[in-house]
Length: 221
Image 1 (cartoon, helix red, strand yellow):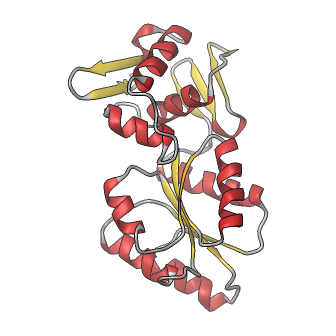
Image 2 (cartoon, one colour; image 1 turned 60 degrees about the vertical axis):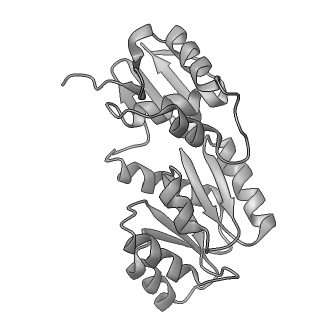
């Protein structure tokens, strides 16, 4: 899943990017609040991790902008403001959860998992489709009870498609979600990953919608 991190402390941002990427997330980083709304309008993200103390504008105003634009993504606040009124103000502005600095990275990842899980209507972190079970936090996937080894990008791509069965993703959106801003892929990388996934699972797992994109089909109830 792709997450937008908005944090002006470069050392903290670097650490969070590394930690989240090791957990399978694609992370893009902004150090200011001004570009956030445009980024969310024109790029595909699953959630936002947002510092309130930004150098160009208050994070509360960024949250209000996001909600006024009818962008319904989970927002996790990071803040050094530990007064109850500050927390209430952030939640009332439209945030979904908050974490007070200093914090433990494992708690941040757990809270982020919970927000993303709820936003997708799932009860737990495991994504199941037919005989496939994917565990995001463990970076493991099983097919017919046998573990299947995937590369980091193959795992991300499969997690995106399994997380929204029936939804058609364009190649361009999949590239954004898998690679983010800082790792431009080869032009045929998505096709290559899909080819490998079909071989490792089964050919009809990922359907090509000609001229549109790719999807996995819902399993009949």
